[in-house]
Image 1 (cartoon, helix red, strand yellow):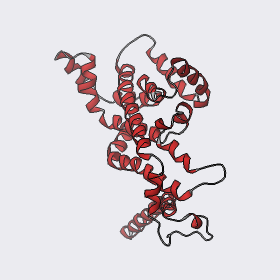
Image 2: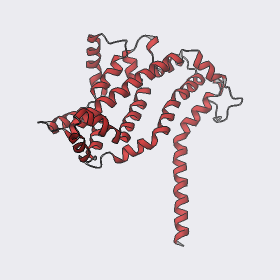
Image 3: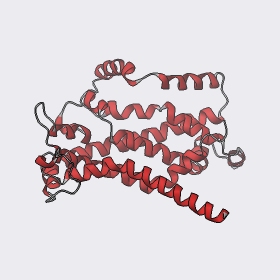
Image 4: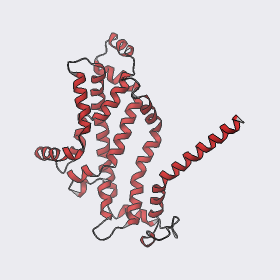
Length: 277
């Protein structure tokens, strides 16, 4: 009887998980369905899930009516530079907070965490004034340079992971003559690969989907990112929903691919981070 009850509980749990997964997939499935419809089928009541006939031309037309190849290249460049900046700066700063002894280290760490409480709109105007004074408006520098100065959340994430690594590895490396930078690059970074992968995934998703920052700093069409390019399908009086859904689905695919490829490291990094305070 206990085995039967255990089996029912297992199947009930699986059914619940599949139901929740399907619930979260509905928006993606609706986007896929809408991307294959002509515009007059978009708002039919009752909704038509299977387009009849499917209009595959929406994809080719949506991706060629605008220079989406240029937008993808711009977004990829900004994303890669931002990932590089966060991995470099956050790793160095997190190691300093986790291992190096300095007066006021804990106080500075608390101050850094307190900056996470400032919402982006509070710092938006001062940052724009600063970047405008530097002459960085209409360049990708406002979108990439701040990443090389660190991010409080990623620094906290990596610091907590570094605290879980025994000091014996560093002591052995110092006995062999390694300096601090060599220890970070050759010892700590490889061992912190799950946490670094988590930072890279978070950064990729946030940068690829960012709309507000490119809207503020980029005014030249040749510098636009994919999120800005999608807005061309919307105007004051009308929206080409079919093209918008087709282009949105294509620009969403890189995020899904990156997550599924690196999900093992992502889950491991989230699980192991924060074990030791």
